[in-house]
Length: 501
Image (cartoon, rainbow, N blue to C red; front, side, top):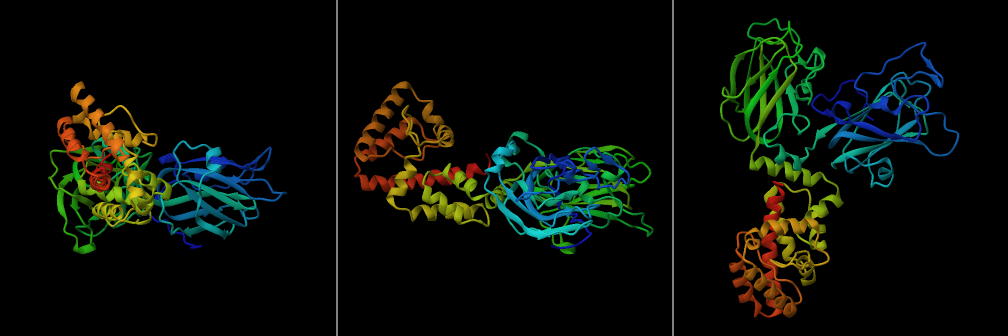
């Protein structure tokens, strides 16, 4: 346990109600509701407050256990992410706090029920650890896996005021395409603050919250400066490399303490004082309690990863929105990070959607973490080449027949989607051509015992038919090798498309 009074300001409370966190179930909350655990406010004490069940307490408190076992609750994180630090706050629980606690994590769908969570595959985040009453109990978390839900165990019973779960957001990649231009700085997408000159009155991370500020304390505010030419600043790491096309700087609630001016600078890499900053928004005047929008005023800069907001000379800003489009390189980095941190079963399922060999998918899952996306593709090829013929044949069986109506029993929905996209030009062929292709497919299958495999993207039915006819007379050993070569091409392209799905 790491005892400290300093919040990790560069991290985000993933369980915050503001972000959608919720306590889904507690096996016992007789004295005080489980929902108090993740309230954003600090716990308070009310000396003479009692309910019909006993002393009113601002937290989660179970009854005194008279049987074997322990108490626990299930919690859904507001945003999936990597957990770095956990705070178990036992404020005002002095003679009734748990002796110890442990915390487990899992990856489940956002609408998982308590019944489903009971049977989830859990992994340890915090081992059974002693707690101190009336204290902030901090725990470092070293697990590098993605987490969506928590199981908070207290031994054997008692009360905890608040639970804070600090980490880094892993964004929902499959939503980025549908959203188009996104706020690359938003904490909901994975943006985060990494450094700032001062945050005496308000945390810099407040700048990136998804909702408009509730009050002046819900923004970033620095102390009053007294030196001439003073500048305060905050550095934001974007969710992905990209181009910023639209900016909103909101001084909502800051009326007598807003900055006089501000500017934005950007860089691809951040290296302290050695960073090469470029202008994105030149110095502009600000107004009190106003949402300022900038678009035509922005300089065009590609592959931005870090943004420095400078305010002159000091003051408060409630929110900063940096809307833009992730670059291809940005997509790759975020996708690889997601792949590296997802659980084993999910990663294997993803790999199986691109190549149906169980042995290949297991080896790819085991090969994590990957340094970049090219390493994923290179490893995919080298692993596939080491497989046995039986593994190759298993991969072939995961494909539907090209241009045909028949399919195989183990063709998954995902494989059908991939194949449909890859065979768009073939599907547009005449009924006569498709009939001929189906006939030749059947002859190929009867001769070799597996379906005809070819890299179909961009090929017409006529071209595909010519390739099929030319390969039909080969012996089966040769065709297994030919099909394996085509399968490797298909897998590489599917992995590339996976990056942008």
